Amino acid sequence: MPQDLPPWAAVYQQAQRWLSAGCFEQRAEDLRAVLRLAAGHKAEPSAAILDSRTLRATPESGERAGYDGAKRKQGSKLHMAVDTLGHLLALHVTPANADDRAQVEHLTKAVQAATGDSVEVAFVDQGYTGDKAATAAREHGIEREVVRLPEAKRGFVLQPPSWVVERSFAWATRFRRLVKDYERYATTLADLHIVAFTCLMLEKAALLVAGS
Image (cartoon, rainbow, N blue to C red; front, side, top):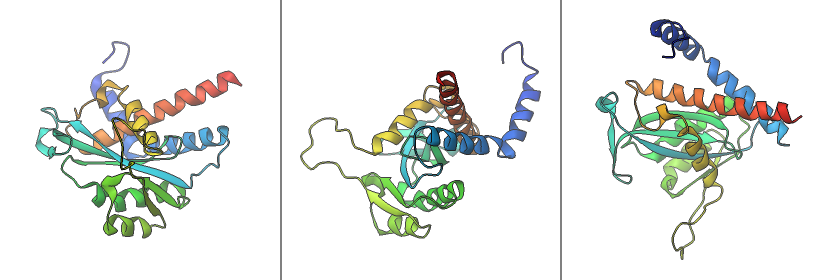
């Protein structure tokens, strides 16, 4: 902790109070609406983009880690939904061996709760194929649309609109605490991502004010 801050225990306890009260979730929702309006969009989105990211485990998180065979990593998986501008809508954390398709119900429910049921379509990659994922999304009023890669691709292919959520994951890695899973609890890892995205949106809002 920097020397000009209160004792570690006092800072931790106050942060936990704010997190438990949902202060950062509310700030993130307010900032997302402000930034969307400033960009010429409606305050609440009609489309979302879903994806996941695997964070490598550390000794602190090892007890709840799982193995992601596709990424060849032992760790935790962050499942996230963003709007088409890359702003956070919802997220949650599972062991890395969790199936992405099984998380669609949780994410779409959280997205509609955060947006007032405004989202009509969710763009996903080919990891979310299958009737189960489509049905889970439809139960919350969202149509799942799978964005498929070209059959004759060569090398890296930019895959719109999936690149938007990949960029959001990259934004999160600007925070060293989020490069790996350093947390003992999955809820803390999720909360720190919400704090990080709130900070990112605050920075964008400040730039808008400075430029006006």
